[in-house]
Image (cartoon, rainbow over all chains, first blue to last red; front, top):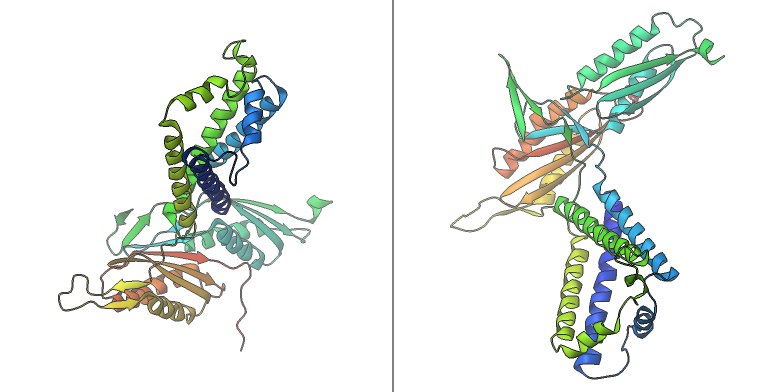
Length: 179
Length: 214
């Protein structure tokens, strides 16, 4: 979103700067220096258009709808709450704050899950308050695998000393479930 | 910024649960959000007003008016201040747009640190890159770290440090964090001759553990 905002800002600022300078130049050229006709910005045609078309004409309604839609999209995008940032870790040094991105935490939990014997693969999705781990095993009888996996994941989360650790939600699927 | 919870042995500092994403220029990010939002609001209001006029919300007679009626042109022609005022307004808009454009390329990176603020017998500056290079080199020498990036921001008399430390999975994140705090940050403070440098550490955890090569 920050990159999108920066691109939009660059485009809008160039457009506004160009229009501002050209309009100033045109006003000075025609009204200040008394020339007839435009210097750079051909404003006569849109000016004539706006003097000839009424509000309920289709082109004016379409242009108004496009302007309103663009404005609404920009406004909603900027009002939309930003994604939560990094999860912080409790520390012991004043003035030092340590954070881990949710993606990183997901990688770490997936890594811990796949290191447990019997787990074939694991996918993790971390939200602000919840970490959802979906693990898969090829074992026909997983036995206590789910308990072992949960214990390992809980230990890994505890070891990070997160200020507000996300709640762990584990789903273990095995071969029988897939058939 | 943080609250502390103390037990009998060590002080555990509980910062806010989340940190905002890292950025080179936080003020520009905020300004972009506000300005784009305001432009969006202006466009929305202008477009909605045009639609309302077109559908007769302002009266059935108004919908048959031309968008720029002749009386507007007459008003401009009868008032000598109109065109100079318009030129001044558009010039100010152009200047503000130019400021906004230049701001997009700003960064809060600190290039020099004032080691003796207010020194009466001269000024002493330390190159910020020398500090960040040393910090990066030290952290990258730790087992369990694959990459470290440091940058200084703030003011020459009140620097702040941001560290991005990429781990390779061989050593726990808590252990690395402790080592960075106890050693690298302490050394940086010592080099800068200050008691505290507000520091942010972003730990990047790997998808796979790097294997030790013997």
